[in-house]
Amino acid sequence: MSLSVEEQKALRGTLGQFPTGVCLITCAVGGEKLGMTMTSFNSLSLTPPLILFSIDKRARSLPQWEKAEGYAVHVLSSTQQDLSNRFARPGDKWAGVPHGTGLHDAPVLPGVTALMECRAFRVEDAGDHLLFIAEVERHSADPDRDPLVFARGRYAALETGERADTGWPLAIHY
Ligand SMILES: Cc1cc2nc3c(=O)[nH]c(=O)nc-3n(C[C@H](O)[C@H](O)[C@H](O)COP(=O)(O)O)c2cc1C
Image 1: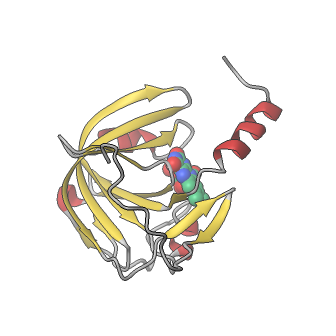
Image 2: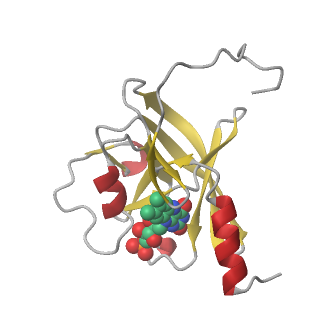
């Protein structure tokens, strides 16, 4: 099934009602550093520990991503909107961006709210995107940093008011 331009716009609007965090996912291939802003990140499995993200087939760097042996998934913090914008545009994404090197040589950036270093597990064809599944090998989180939020096609902030007492954990397998 293929959608008309209007139908695609409508579906984007519907999907945009689902808020996400914003990830900067990096990798290194043959000495070249790659980084891309992505909201398609999600958790997938605990046994084994798997996460997923997807990349548009039109992305210039896609052929390189397919060769990567691992990735560093950064969950951006509320102060890192500039980084999100920078890594969503073509051009020299890395100029002046401080970073170290993590597993599989993936660039690792400071100041994030969470970091997952992963090894490539599987790449699946999925319509106009490729679906990347990766196994988490090392991770860390900084609960004192609020995550950057994306909803309805724009950045948003997490509301940090009083939490309702939901009686967590709920009676589901999460
Ligand atoms: C908030 C936000 C989320 C994005 N999420 C994705 C995503 O999940 N997958 C994707 O392929 N592109 C996503 N993009 C677009 C890419 O970041 C952008 O097209 C990418 O930098 C292109 O890479 P290239 O230089 O290799 O072409 C997103 C952009 C923004 C601003």
